[in-house]
Amino acid sequence: MDKNKIVVDGIIVEIPQERLEDMETLEAMSDIQHGQALEIVPLFRRIFRDDYSRIKAELKGDSETLSVETMTNWFTKAMEALNAKN
Image (cartoon, rainbow, N blue to C red; front, side, top):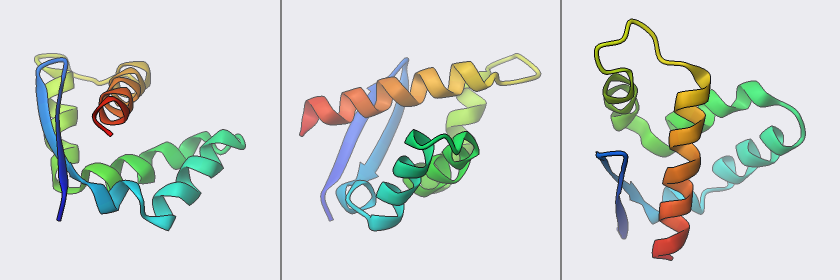
């Protein structure tokens, strides 16, 4: 299982390549591009799995909440980092 290890804003995550190449992942990305913005949450869960809660906690820090903008900006940078590796 090939894993992509990335560090984005100090958050380390390893994502197996097959998660990125999975048909369900592609379908979720397609849904988002076609205006189904809420599909972003299942996509986060599909890609990050057990790391999803940790990523949210690290992004939240001492704050009581995590904004959608912060999470989506981090996700965008994570995808850019993954693309740079491949």
